Image 1 (tube, rainbow, N blue to C red):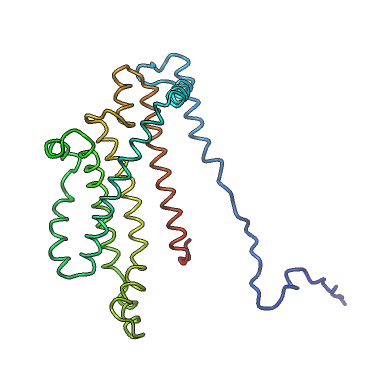
Image 2 (cartoon, rainbow, N blue to C red):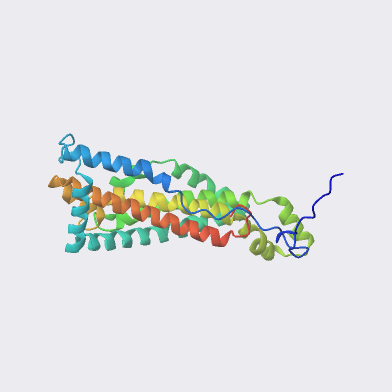
Length: 276
């Protein structure tokens, strides 16, 4: 006859009743294996440059680019260009985001707003806005105004579309529940409609920031006398591919930084979502 051995209760079994079981999964850090292919490409780039297979007139080596980055940073040239570009994109983004938000909220909430605002916006957004640069130069001259206007125009449309779509796609059951609970029109707007439209609005914000940097790059290639675009154009005249790449890397870093900022804002604003 087999005699069963009494088991010792584990710590998990001894936990107080009502508490959820502890999770066995640990929080994982960034997977360093994702760096393997970028670092391999960087090493291959450096080796082909050192072997003379890649001409410096076409593309400088990573080490030369790093030295050029240190050179323009130490001379203050990169800092001045950085400050000018940040100022342009900040002003342009503020103007474009304000216009996009205002038009999107008005068209999303009002039937008359939808009828009057949405048709011309839909027509204008199909225009290739980068093709408007000659008109902007004729209208605003060759100073700061056409560059800021180009950024503002690129920012306004994606933000408008996402705000408009976010408001229009709010679940009717939510507004009906708010109406049954006695919310007035303003309370339904403030507590139900606008919070429900926030996820779509943040998507539009990320798209707008990406287009803002793209617009700035194009705008600064035209008659600029300061900024990162001017730094790149000036380097092109002297065949300094190393400085050109430094400017492009700074553009990319700024784009990634602003996108990370919006993602942080998204995590804080949408912490109620289970996926976050």
